[in-house]
Every structure is written in C-alpha cells, then in structure tokens.
Image 1 (cartoon, rainbow, N blue to C red):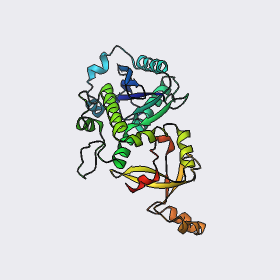
Image 2: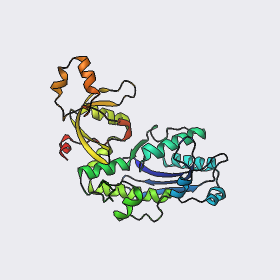
Image 3: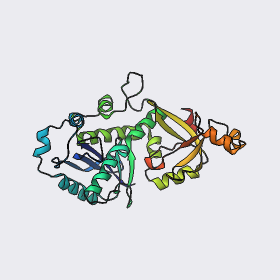
Image 4: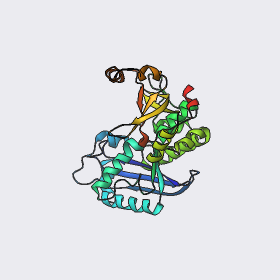
Length: 296
C-alpha cells in the first residue's frame, strides 16, 4: 500500500476563489500511519488579498504575522509542490479535505501555474477522515468520543474531538497541529473500527470505487444529514448522465411497486420523499460496507 500525505491549510478566507493559503502543514506517513517526514510553512499575504476577520480569529493569525514571513505565497507553494514530488505517490487525506482543503489547493495551484490535480492523478489517490469518523461511529458506536450540540447530535469538529479522544492538540487551528490531530483520529479508526478503515481503502480511487459499486449486488453506504449518519442498503442502477455518479436503488423500498409504474407516474414518484433512488458520489471517498451493516 502507498504512503499517506496528511495535510491541512490555514487560509485568509473561506472563499477558495478570493482567499489565500497562508499556512501549510503536511505529514508523510507509511501505511501504518508512522511519520516519515513533514512540511510546515507560513507565508506573507499577497498584495490585493483582503483577509476575512473571522478567518484570522479562527486560525489565530495576527496582521503582523501576515506581513513578516520570509516567504511569499508563490515561494511557499513552490516549496510545497517540490516536497510532494519528492515524497512520490501517495494517498492525500485530511479532515474535511475533499470539500475544503483540496478545492482550495486546486484553485491555488491553477493560480500559480502548477498542475491542479496532483492529489488524484498520476497514481495519487485521496480520502477524508471526516467521512470515516462518521462511518466508524455509525457502524461501531463509541469508536470516537464526541461532544454534543444543543440538538443532542455528535459534533465532528477537530478541535473538540482531539482532546476528548486523548489526542494532543495544543496548537489547534494551526496547520501542522490540525494535521497531527487528524493522524491521531485516523489511528483510532484503524485500530477500533478496522473494517471501516479497510473498506475506505477500496474507495480512495474513484475508478475503483465505481467498479466496486457496480460489481456488488448489494452494498451498504452511509449518508450524513441533519446531524446524523444513516445507513442505506442499495443496489446499482445506472450512472448520472452528466456527473456520472452511480444512481442506486434504496432497498428499504419494494422495487416491484416501481417496476410496474407507467413512465409519467414513475417520473412523479422520483420527485417525492422519501427518495427511493440515491446518489453515491463515488469520487468523494464513500465508505462501502457489507449489506449486513444496514441494520446499524
């Protein structure tokens, strides 16, 4: 199995188009999650970039820190890219990285005239510990300790999860501090919910993930909404005509009801709740489990 690159960014804004990466933390590990090397760097704010006050409050960055770094933004990105090239093929993984950090990275690489898809091409793959944490607690309750919000739902915020699970996170919301906390969460999942960790390694590549969904007659995957993870036993039907995502039948419903429906009636039924056709975003690191896990 290839190495892992755990990474995290602190940014001047939540907007990937107008913000800037101001700090990068990355740790190279082997497949046992043992550290092999690390990258930790901060840069100056580029001219013309206006930071969001809340972003600076969250990542504890002062205006002086934005001006006094020895590196320009371009220099920091160049050093990071060269480090990744030296580290070689790997699985890139973070905490909510697929929805945030990776999107920020792609925009940044494009803006600095670098190849933007380094995390998912040329033998590299990608994953996300946030989705694994939710799946682990669903299929193996109490794998991770979580605080609760006012609605009684588990909170999946790294700065709260790390101390509750005995992970040192004294430098919360610094890039390298968040990376080390993410590695700690990953180790807990691999040790306490090994079936979830092993299943997740089968879907870090979108082609392999799609093939798995198409090949399995029945499978279980989870969706997270309204603060809770829910398991769904499904079977593959077809791919979305535009996005190519697998469209799957939710087997909580009786398929015979829909097989005999006229087209117009079926079209209307597909727009109603609860949905009987579900979308599995195979390129977003889904966790595909045995259908027996649908009873969780």
